[in-house]
Image (cartoon, rainbow, N blue to C red; front, top):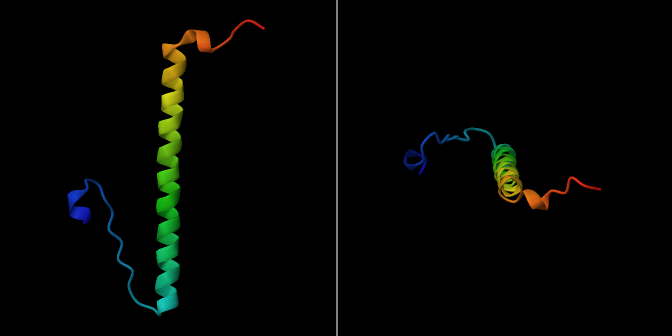
Length: 63
């Protein structure tokens, strides 16, 4: 699957009991979730910046 995605990382979980493999899988899953959350936050931040530049009236400078 990763061969179709540029710059993808393929992790192989080897050795150990079922519980060791489950723990490694959960760690990788948590890392993936954090990465996706970071991308989503960056996308939202860029989108908000773009709106402020397009509509200067939306930002009030007068009290």
